[in-house]
Image (cartoon, rainbow, N blue to C red; front, side, top):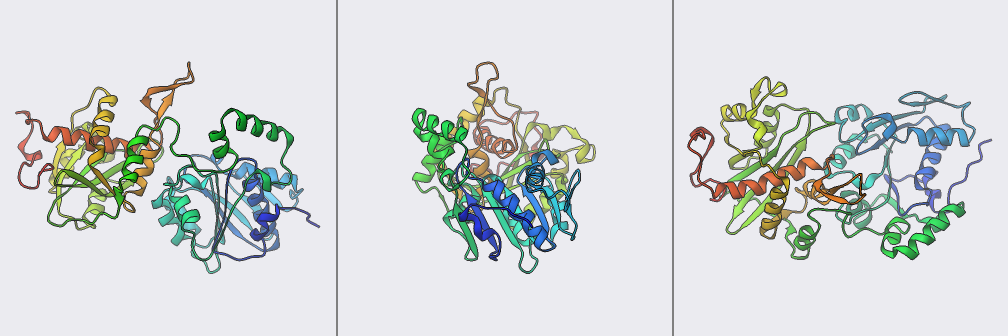
Length: 427
């Protein structure tokens, strides 16, 4: 007979149906441990198809595969579950599958018949990933489970599940006090941090949101935009052109294409939309833009748009887009990223963000941080390269483009790629 205990606060995981089940909070609360255990128990009680997912999963090592395997051993369930390299199978047909959201959108479609989707480290799941996942998990009676340690109130998951939870949801805050098996070794660490850094203690152990991430480059500017209510609903103005600002990437693991859409309105800039994806052709991105039915202005591309690319069929992105009838300008390569960042900080006070349509862009900006120097352990002056970089790089292109528009055009630049009429960026 299977004997497995859960913290009293998480009894709802078994025997109570709800579309959304979530637990958030600080370290040492057994959130992930308990969710893994509950899913293994459910998998014995009835055949269950379970998708274990997170925003970023480059390999099975990034998943909860090991956590589930450890719980199978702890509960002596090796007789019932077979642990395979990329899946876990139960004798009654229960199956655990593993996939990342940001990199495996096509693979996710195969989980339309899933009974449960478990989102681990859900605090970083983007708005776009949520919008793809929710309709994918559509089987009658299916559930979406989420575990996370909150970081920023701006994060899509925190907004979606904590600030504005769906009607059919059970969302609980779990901290160390709710763990009946909280170990003494963690108690000592917790008390030491509480004495040394009370603010860090509140985030790490009590599950409070941070004001900003450590080393965040645009933290002050984003906070000011929020205080001044410049993150709100921004209507599209059909009398003004929409200009785009690109960062180019092709491989979902190492590079993504990010596109900011903005309008110049008097002395302000309205960032009204954002698109980010990977492993698509230039034609695909243009088709996606055309679906929005905006009046288009100039497409501002990074310097590598002038280089031939295998992903672009051996042609330049500049040439492809020009032949598609787009008005194109290619920005010069800037020698110092710091100059681009300073340019972006300078114009931040003139920016207005559409709350919903630029949510994923702001997530990139919130997580755009300076890297840590390996020798000193301190933050350096170079941005950390990660999955959030692409949106931030498109944002830097936006800032550079504003500066470039005010400069005289070089003679050698092709008139075909530069439009200076009423629809020009500065208008």
